[in-house]
Picture (cartoon, helix red, strand yellow):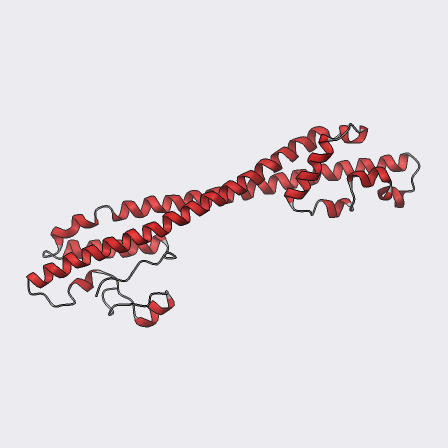
Length: 233
């Protein structure tokens, strides 16, 4: 029975275990050893595919980190601006409790500042960008440098997040292709072993023993509907 397929969801560590078991079994059997070159590229191919996943992991974590830092600092700059703007309303004669209800304040904060900074970063950055692109305002101008820096960094961080999603998608394609390639390579080795075993009078299941087998229950849990008999573990 041909070896089980390599499922797409199998980790690269588990794929490596499968590869090493087969390679060591082939190496250990003098009859099978001449077929070892058929497996020569398996480990390196696994590592190359793993690198694509690691690159995707790094891109995702890096974008998360840059987005968090940008969001934190943008929120801080917005709060500073809101506090000064509210103070200016009081200086101009507005009662403190009404300072956030003036037309001037609502021009920038249609919702309370503590609600504003909880907006999704994309929305917050977009609104701050609109402030900066608008007419000059004395209070805003005092905070323009900080707002501009962290609004820009927020936009960059959001772009990094979009880019990391593309890298993740590519790594998934690599993962699926590697699973298919390794499955085909294992099938080819099994056929070569089966032919060799038949020519040398070996038992019919001799070729099966060079591959990790799973029980029917274990295969069902892993999504493999065609498990072979239990063999080396």
